[in-house]
Image (cartoon, rainbow, N blue to C red; front, side, top):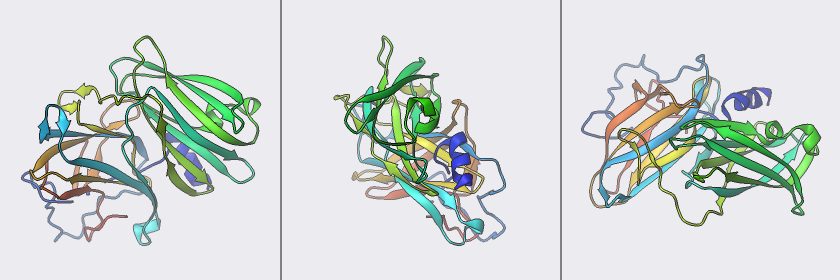
Length: 298
């Protein structure tokens, strides 16, 4: 439990990446060399977020057929017994959202929140904690710099003086400022060492497209996964599916919490940007750290 909580305090929820065919040869790693292994459980944990951008296969800025989700978790020692894992869908950008909160020191329950600001300007995000009867308990404001991520437990966001040790209620998340810029939010629910993802309900109304974050990264049709982690026993798997009848070419870019490139080993290739990934019509491309047999952790 202490290991999970300690890591989460630094990275929130955690992980690394895997496999498929494409013209770049990215997914066709030769596994005859059994000395190869993408994992480095002794390396420090890296945390941040991932952006999946369609390079081809869009019509008027709308991606045709791209479906993205990820699984991340804590590997067993040596990776022989799988991984404690949770699945994440890319949430839509929001200026007003709500999360269920259940925190108990007695039962080791807590809620972790990760927020990514994909915009070119800093964003002030206001978080309001309410009891189950709707009564406000506390409010705090977090400044998230441009293209950076923040991740904290509810018990870190609000001091013990602001909340009871046991609470059930909601957390309202609102981005402020004159521009009212939208952010990406995800939650992770803990009880001891066990965890699961928690759906974020957006109250914003209209969907906000992801802005262009760098040349070739982001923009309409791109997907942002607000939590990615690698090293220290954690692993992340990205699954990219194409439901269209034509091939789809995408790129995957990984970023640290401070917005700088995050380098990880995925399908035998070590990089922060994975380019020219082709998903065949109706096909799937899986990116994950592979062991010496070419297997992933999930």
